[in-house]
Image 1 (tube, helix red, strand yellow):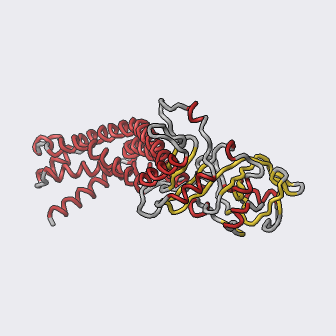
Image 2 (cartoon, helix red, strand yellow):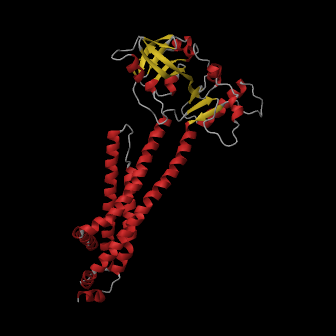
Image 3 (cartoon, helix red, strand yellow):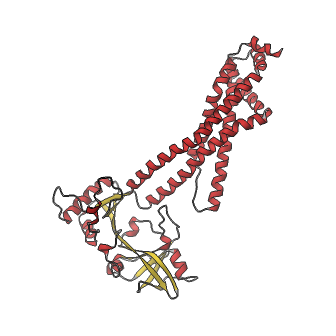
Amino acid sequence: MIYLKLLRESLIFAFNELVVNKVRTFLSLLGITIGIFSVISVFTIFDSMEIYLHNSINSLGSNVLYVQKWPWMGGEDMQWWKIMNRDEPTLADLETIYRKSELLEAATYMAGTNKTLKNGNNSMENISVQGVSYDYPKIMSLDIENGRFFTEMEANNGKGIALIGSAVAENLFPGENPIGKDIKIGGHKTYVIGVIKKKGDDAFGNSPDKTLIVPVNYLRNFVNLRHSGGTAIAVLAKANISNDQLRDELTGILRSAHRLKPGKEDDFAINETSVISKGFDSFFAIIGTIGWVIGGFSLLVGGFGIANIMFVSVKERINIIGIQKAMGAKNFFILFQFLFEAIALALIGGLLGLLIVFLLVVIVNAAFDFGMVLTLGNIMLGITVSSAIGLISGFIPAYQASKLDPVEAMRSLS
């Protein structure tokens, strides 16, 4: 209880000194405030970007593999001229995968093109038209606000029906319910059966709002799938099946279907979202280092500022230290008294820096549709770093104060 009482008195004494010396306190914590603001604001911006990117990547499915012509990532040894001569995945490949795979949960064929859409006098140019097979909603995120998805029979028959994005609905059918009405895709009459819920752009600039989804067999009426570009077969693994297991199975199935001899390289690529995630992880690791460098100089200046102020504070209070020691104050009481003052200075500066970051987040979120987030991890990082700077900066002055001889200290009264 005596030790707790001494600690409490040390804290009270330290805070009283901070309140009495307002100008010195303000100047001391200014450097820490700027430093913490610099570091945490950089981390907040890039953490928010990272969350945004990962959410966009995860929408593609972490346990989904994509059979495509081109690999998503290629090294220096990638022979692009050979890859360019490959065929696009075909609907026959999809049928073969469905027939022979034992590890898949679902698979869908996806192909796309850009077309002009018309409804009477209303038109939209360069709109993404996606042709997909029936199991598309089982694999990809698809929120239908109004209407329905096409049936398996409609998909197989290639019926002229479509789901349209919210922006397409607003532009082609202003103030109307588009369900049951028709639009023209390059002269082909297509009936609207559903409207996709509004989402906005993802991190890659793609948006379902300006998209039109049709059965892939209907898309074949105005697109040559072999030369459309960007064709893919998305394959979802069963529960408890790893991507590596599914990849090995798909590789065997497709090599057999394409009659590739042993030793001959694959004429297809199997991609997964982890490749993109790893690339961004390394990028954000570099950005994190830059953030520390940017804020590190401010934190260093702030730390020196606190150390300098604490040396001045010790010098000013030598006589008080002598009186305290003469009255029986232990060395640790003096040490903690000055350490608490240094830590409190740095912590207040850190909290002010975090407050400024929080206000920045609120302003950005109010002005832009970005969704910046000040994470708990960054808040704890700011508190921890500022406290550590206070501890390190204040230790030597506090230690010197604790080791003062009471007689020599009291002589300063004369």
